[in-house]
Image 1 (cartoon, rainbow, N blue to C red):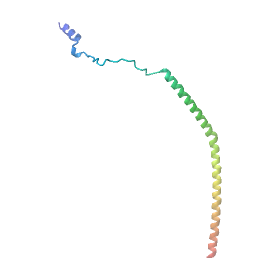
Image 2: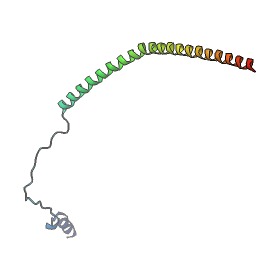
Image 3: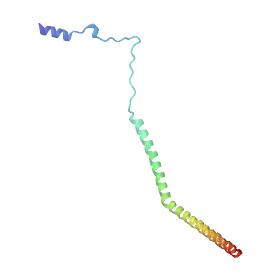
Image 4: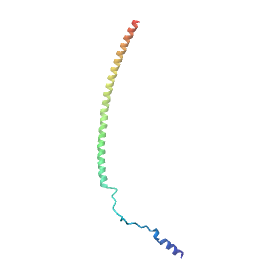
Length: 110
């Protein structure tokens, strides 16, 4: 008898425990959109691959430019700087010569 009571309680489905759906308004069921679209992903991949290829070409051109033109530019700047430094030294020497002349005149007047 005890076993019968246990089986009855376990298999019994009281009305309070049953969930009921309110069908007002009626439930609408639709197919959800695919989260993964292979064709769209393939198209995007090809486009990105082309962009990366163009950027790689640009990077290589810049590397070549820097490898060839940068040393030449540095040489031109160094030559120009040496010229400027030479001009500054010459001018400083002129000024020092004039200062020595003025000192000599000042010593002679005393």
